[in-house]
Image: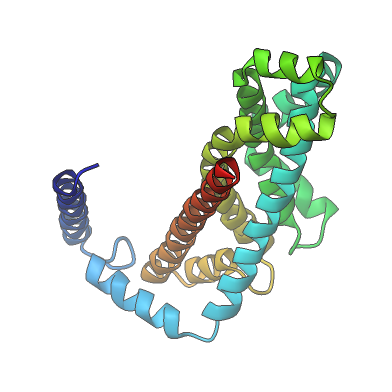
Length: 257
């Protein structure tokens, strides 16, 4: 993308933000009560108060740890089982009913069951793993199907070890598919984590703070904590992009050697 196109894109995005803020302001004026819909300036003011509050650091840290842990667990499981299913029809057939059940079950059902089975702090992790796993799992298999079969056949002819085939052909082949799935999965994870935190109410959590604000009908605080969740999601996407760029750089460096 050229610098001119980039500036044009940022300008359009900024115009979209201003339009959204204007519609929000109009909506707040029509509502006529902060308890229903506070204006954007009021929410920004409350957002600043949230950032300065004692509850903010532990809530942000614990929610981030839950989301990061859920992503790590779901990624490892999806990579291992996705590779196995992509290379074995038997494993794929065995996994198909489980994946269909996970994808079809409402997230609220998983949250309610997790509330019965686990401590409140583990509920968001369990639910988020289930939500993210099918996304990464299926993309890993798509990536495997996109690998050139002639490369695999050549590797077998020259008796290349399975570990080397995995490292030099299969993993690079699913690289872009894995990171594309990870972006989507992380977005789902934050929604699932916050929703589970609201219901399970662990000691320190963004979702717990949102629930407390709702109890006292502090709509501005609910929206301010929602902004925290949105920023957390945006930060995770930036980290994924940085990780993707780093891996690409390492791969290019390795190829050049």
